[in-house]
Image (cartoon, rainbow, N blue to C red):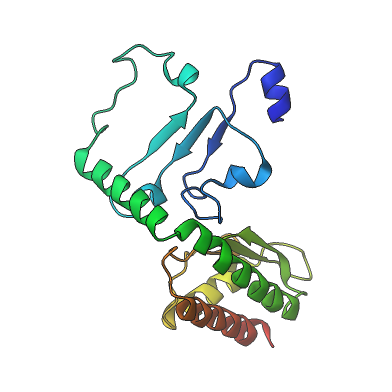
Length: 201
């Protein structure tokens, strides 16, 4: 697709709002695929606190608009920009991208073992770094196991593991890049225990 875009003078834009800034064990998720986009949309992990987003791109593309053509009422907020710079400093100083990759290998193996215990229900589990999802299905119909997944997530919440309720038959595991290894393993054990309890060990 990227090769086709280059041959046909089409820009390649990558959405890294959730997956960027070290989340997948690389600075950007597209780096896993050996491609170079023309535009990158960033957010969330860029400041890890205050509202901040950014579009990164090749100079030839970003300079196409004259000054004043691309503006925003809230653009250039100095407080959010300072938070973003501080976040990027800590990310580099503390090696959080590399840490995400290392902990992600442990997380992936552990989820693989949990998925193997419940192969009848697990449609797929995938991810890299500290960004994984587990998708469950009704073994009889093959439909997403929405209510069961929601029960698993709520059980984890009651046991101290904060997870996002999707309502779509899957749950995401996206701990902070600064999570302590012991805390990550505690969360894995809670998730595995909730699945064993609800799906049957």
